[in-house]
Amino acid sequence: MIVRIMGEGQVKLADAHFTELNKLDDELLDEMESGDEAGFRRALGALLDAVRSLGTALPDDALEPSELILPAPDATLDEVREMLSDDGLIPG
Image (cartoon, rainbow, N blue to C red; front, side):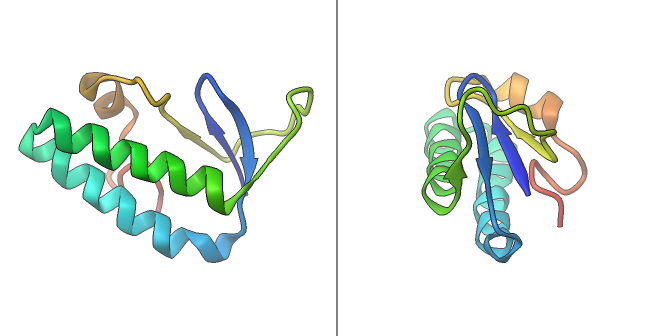
């Protein structure tokens, strides 16, 4: 799966990593629901760090269609809320 981190680029991730990423996505949702800005920042950073470390960055000139788009590391709580689906940022 190709994942885009807004403002950074694209990462190719194996489907096997989505169980771990869904756990981090659930933590992010919990922090957002509580309105804890510090917790939200930590959870968003952990999710994006996991995508970066588990995946392989695509070259900047690659134009692959992104199957999943994640917010930029400096996204606000409100910006991330607008990106959410019923499953969070990561489906499943």
